[in-house]
Amino acid sequence: MAKLFAFFFVFVSFFCTFAVDMLEKINGIVLRTVKFSDNKLIVDLFTLSHGRQSFATTISHSVHGRSQMAFWSPLSMVEFYADIRPNTTFVPKTKDVRLIFIFSDIPYNPMKSTISLFLAEFLSASLRDEQQNIPLYRYLETSLMYLDGVKDSSSIANFHLIFLLKLTRYIGILPNIEIQSVTDGQSQPLFDLASSTYTYSIPSHRHFLSIDESAALPLLFRFDFSTMYLLKLSRQQRTRFLEVLELYYRLHVPSFPRLKSIDVLHEIFS
Image (cartoon, rainbow, N blue to C red; front, side, top):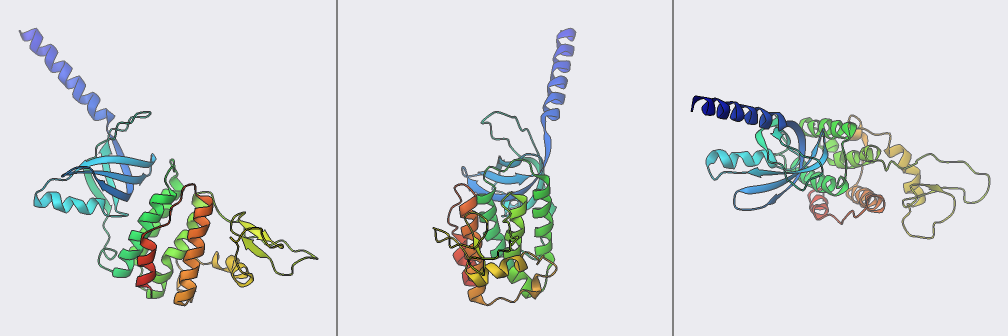
């Protein structure tokens, strides 16, 4: 009996050690959540180590459980442990979840919270099949921290526009904004959104910018988060800017949908 007990103890110890070793620390940014049952959620995140990944999590009905919902708010930055197994349909479960960074202003600022909801939907659509991309993850991380801390209202109003412009670089759809000079043909180039480059002939489709918009595009790419307060746009110009960006992503990201939150964004800046 003593030998049997000793064998059982060793087996249990080995199994527990093996199970712990299977758990991996995950850093991720929440893109969306789907309610799976009364107390279970399926959470889509863009993770540092695995790119786009879904996880299952349980939310209890206690006061503590309700507070856990803050972990899974759109664009929350979280850290947890999970057992991720390659080449399987198994949805890993989260364990020991904590917030990496606690937003101090985004949840309470109507403009910022609306922008964050829009960006979460936008990223969920544009990062549908994104694999591990550490520069992209760091860009998202630092951008969201900047949004949380920025105070200038002009900067807040332009944040999502500059964010989406810069995002094109990290997901491989950066437009070619170099203008080639010509000696004949049309004197002013047009930017073709479909081919993502300038042209001196009118495209056969309707997805191109006007002469004025085409001329302004290289200037827009010079702005960053630290200088975006200098970008003075009317409501109409800001709406048009966002429409062009959404169209560009729909042309270059497979299965990119029309976004529901874009109308809310237009409304709050009206």
